[in-house]
Image (tube, rainbow, N blue to C red; front, top):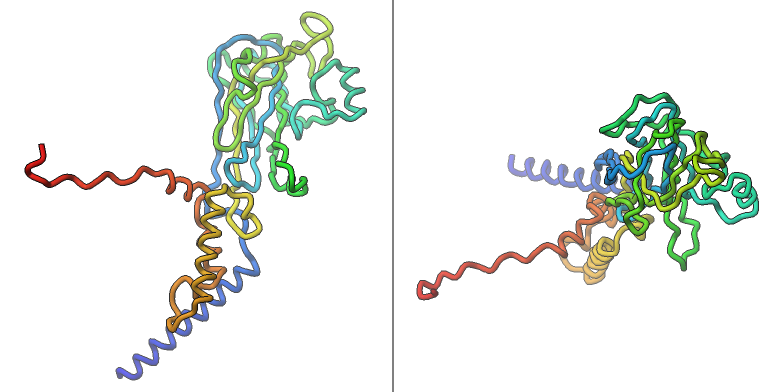
Length: 316
């Protein structure tokens, strides 16, 4: 009986080893790069509300902070306060400011506008909204506006990638339709781990992109800030060798140290077939893919443990 049990145990161990090897070989061929089991939640940023002005519209930029490695971020809606009424929300990739090519300059002269020309904007919301005098009213986009860092992978390697921006334009036909603030910050209205809301301009024209405003030809007012809430969701990025440089420096250093440690132990050899040196490299990749992007930094900055209590009875 004892001999049979030993054979069964050996067969079970051999099966487990082959199963693990097959799992990691399969994973190496089909390595997952984005999260499904990692929580990729919904978020929002709510700005300060000083009720400085209310007019037809306000324009600002939403910019990725690049502090968290993500596959993409989708802006799903905004919440604004004011008389509202017939309201539209539009977005423009790259921010609201026009690019410096000749066609845009011609459009700017036509509209006397600090914005990109109308054909570069996408309508995300259009409807008749009840007034929201006290609390912002949420306006859901018919289709989310996506910001994807992988679109910058063709940027020059020797220069930092340009920030990813989304222009955001909220317009109401009501002259008191949208509440906004004077600019009180140096360009950044609000920031969280994923996005920052930048200052922009206000619009006093009764129609979107209208050249003529309440005080004449110039319908735009500079140094204004969005008031309300921007809602978004993110898809987190998992660590892989291909995504290594998308992660913060402390995480990259930790991953390098772990892989170099495995290589050193493997080269050193030894009689035993256990330890990190004999783990499949894909197993280490698998472990790293489960770690949060900020885990190494949090461990490095955590306070040291308190010193042990002094048990000397003579101490005063």
